Image (cartoon, rainbow, N blue to C red; front, side, top):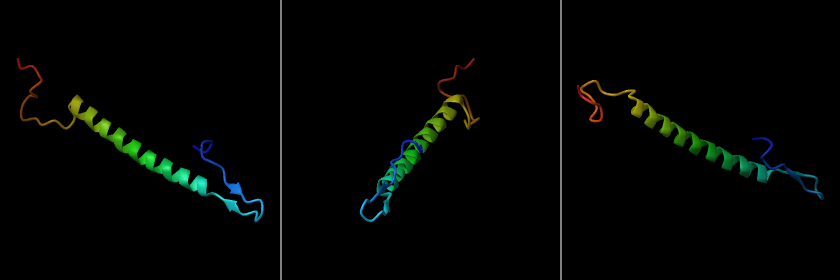
Length: 67
């Protein structure tokens, strides 16, 4: 991640460091990371349900064969 974020700019006149681009980029990346985690966690929950974790023991699933 560090090699992707923009560097801070230095004003040649005042020699002040301006890291606004970097702060914006870190904010965008933080939002992206939160959305990615939410989507990946949602997918993990679907996979758990499809495998049978947390399934009710009342009866068989309508998709399970009954012998």
